[in-house]
Image 1: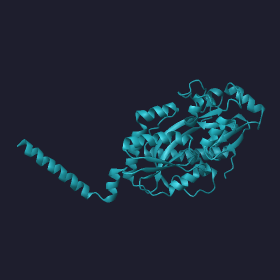
Image 2: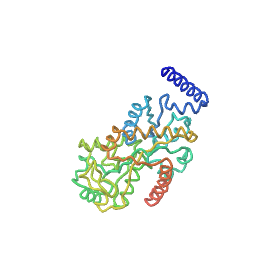
Image 3: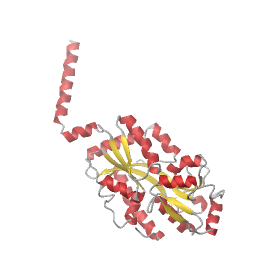
Length: 331
């Protein structure tokens, strides 16, 4: 009797499941199964930069947890706007994502014409990581033992030194210009097509210094290939406890963070967005990625989609003010 009862229950459950599945439309069924195939993620900078430092570990963890690859497509150029333009035009089917950065909230004030709008052509998903900018130098080109002696050196030698950036209008560029404004120094800007190439030339000595995100510089700092003189903001970073912060060095208003976020093209269904956010949060919150983030001095800001959207809007306004104050002419 018990066996027959259990058998009937199993049949009823199976019938109910089949009925529910039959009642789901093709889109709802696809969303419930997401991801059922590899997901493409445009990274709008050259390989090896700060975005890659977070995007590639995220890709590996996503694949581990979901069983589907998160394929990174590096599309560098034009300060990250080329890749953003490509991503904005991708199909809003949940299989095309965009991993942008603080640079993309700077771009509207730096470029007169963009063929996409960050707030209108994308939907914000997750603010994945936030790291402070760090002032790093090639120790063979700039032999100053600390930030104070370095500052004295550049003040005495206007134009003698240069700094590399991920491109005109990126946070690396504006961090350098803001630094020059606040310290009344002159350092020549050398734009690259991404943070990776700029960082390679810094390590190789082709450029003297960078205002880089700690995420991409951390391994080189710890390996002694470049030297960190100061982190931005009002507190030291746990991953570099011996490096002073800007507030300690008499620059209380020098606060520049490099953050990385995930977007989907406009038109991506709301319930599909929720699935993507769920899986990305699960990946970023894993013990493996917590360790990666901590090693790079990064935090995972626990913002909702709505809070991330408000943050983007505030950053666009903030950087527009910085561009105007620094006297940077938009391209």
